[in-house]
Image 1 (cartoon, helix red, strand yellow):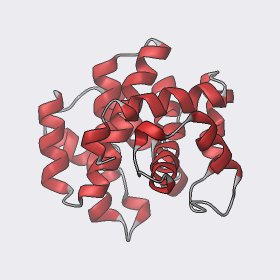
Image 2 (cartoon, one colour):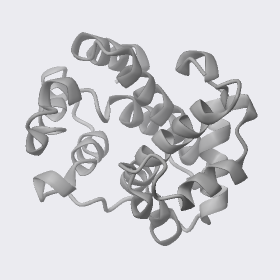
Image 3 (cartoon, one colour):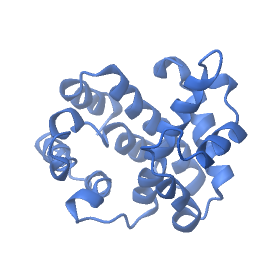
Length: 187
């Protein structure tokens, strides 16, 4: 699957611009993590881009989240099990199936929440720009449980155990990837 094909699927099924921006952020971080971990950058990017593509249609039935995207991908002719399994693994907490097992799957699981924390940190900056966010700022906000309280910090911290990437480095990789597409993210 090409990025253009993935974007078409995403845009057909997700109309909310902020949700799309979240997917773009995860796409960028997944590409950077693929580079770091020796993965296929194009494949990891597509997984990041599409991981929440069915969210608007499944937000009220979280146990169906990712299952619909998996179905759409198969209908579009996707046969790559790495992509299909990574999409499914993203929601194993609600489906009870497909717990992350590969570096790509754990990367998606860990970075998904982190992108939200980075955006929330940027929105607290006087200029509301990613360019002025520093790794230290994100780490400080991460310690403040009241800040962006819905974000699962433990999920982010799993980067150390599952990816063998120290938390500070993980935040740096994600922040720099997101800063590289700041215009697409509106930040």
